[in-house]
Length: 436
Image (cartoon, rainbow, N blue to C red; front, side):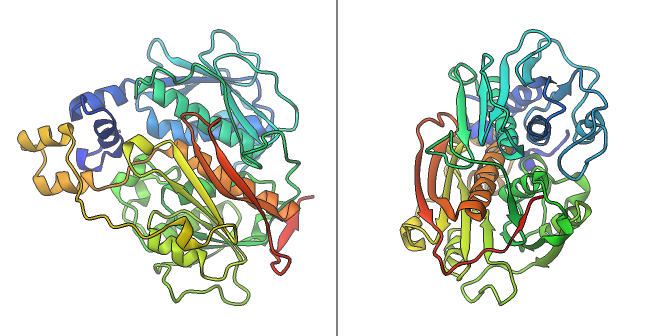
């Protein structure tokens, strides 16, 4: 993939993460990373969800390629591509089955690999799991835990192959989308939303759309998605947003994602305005809001706007925080001001050595370097895990009336998690369809 350096968010991330790496070294490291994916779970819903998550995140994070082997014409069971060949579906998501370089990092979805494996991908109930060795799993995995497991695998492989993290891929990790504090809890997906308001259609929002498409809707046309985002898609978004294609660049995000959602069968309404303090959900509009924006003012407004339930996901902004996730839900134990207290930020961005070198070489002007330094950092795999947490809490509250109103976790070590629960007030009713 050829992309100008000023739009190359992944190279910028690597320079910010490792100050000993310049732009050329960052690109060389990115272009040298590739993975090989095999499976013995390609005939299961969770396994297909894991494979598709690896495809959409991995093809953006491993420039030398995501290669598939031994995946044939098994029919797709989940998502909008149902009935098509699984192999064709993965190739259409930019995986490859020819021309693999030597010495690939081997990821296996399932428990019975055809040969040597570097990382196993498994799911059980609502838990996504990855491990350097096979772990016994149950038979109740679903598409959300499958997608989470695939995203966790991409994160671990990226940390090892690109970031040179010595702890990556060396121990089993797991995370539950249903109850992060109690990984064994949960049940089947029996209800899906009748309508929802999706605020933010960038990195997080597109990851959320990808996970929503996997759910077992009886008829997606019966679910209304109100899609809101005021921004246009830029060239830089191709490497971080899991649905963005080259022909989306220059389009309004709300329109591009709505077209995608309607092709998947959903009913949509779009809003291309910013979500301001004066905005409130009107009668008949969705009462369930899934929020994925990086503007704190907008997040405070949405949380206080009078929705029946707001599930807000946020990602770390700096290179050191790219695997950090924080979820807030409202109503909850915290008010919006408690969740996001005012912060005075008087310092401007600092140039890392890689950017300073580009300025000295006159390959980048000082203004452009400062713009890059001030941008938030992120990777698609973390956005996918955050989306799985949001969807997990959505499914949980529709079934039980209970949800996690606060989750703080880093994918570097998911065992160190903080999570609290809250009961939806009796006065709130969230319309839902029963999954047949």
